[in-house]
Amino acid sequence: MSGNIYKIIVTGPFNSGKTQFIQTISDIPVVSTERKVTTEDRGIKAETTVAMDYGRVKLDDKILHLDGTPGQVRFKFMWEILAKEMNGFIILVDSTDPGTFPEVSELAETFQNFHKVPYIVAANKQDMEGRVSLTEVRRGSGVGDDITVMPCVSIEKTSVRQVLLQIVSLIDAERAKAE
View 1: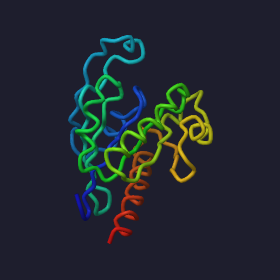
View 2: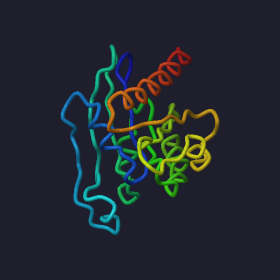
View 3: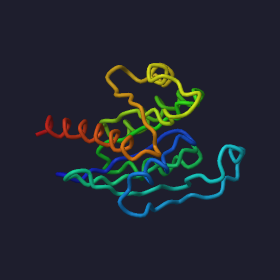
View 4: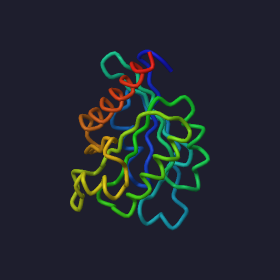
């Protein structure tokens, strides 16, 4: 994809808020593949994404195609399919659940192996009790100092917009270097 069109993957551990993130900002009804949770995770939430979420948003003069991945590892075969032609990705992490932070570096490595593209880590649920600092998210997720780790509240449109503007700016910088 080129010009003012961007394909951005929204990935992250199970229950990090990927579906909500896309639903909050999408200009179109989100195409979702949410199904009832049938595993031991059903005590955490009632439904989970089994294939993908898809939304689209126009920010200024840019059109962003947002593809949300399933968070459960058993659906990981979808990750490579969704990563085709991505321009960048966002790893959403639940900042109230430090046990999931190590998954961030694994996801970063996996998606970078598909395509070397810019990415950021969005520390979601920053509005909730029990959240940890961005420093703790960075430390727990093992990403380098060169990777942006920023706060996010996936139920707030302005917060989601800030995350998207940040990844678009990194993608634009990469595109400018390639020219």
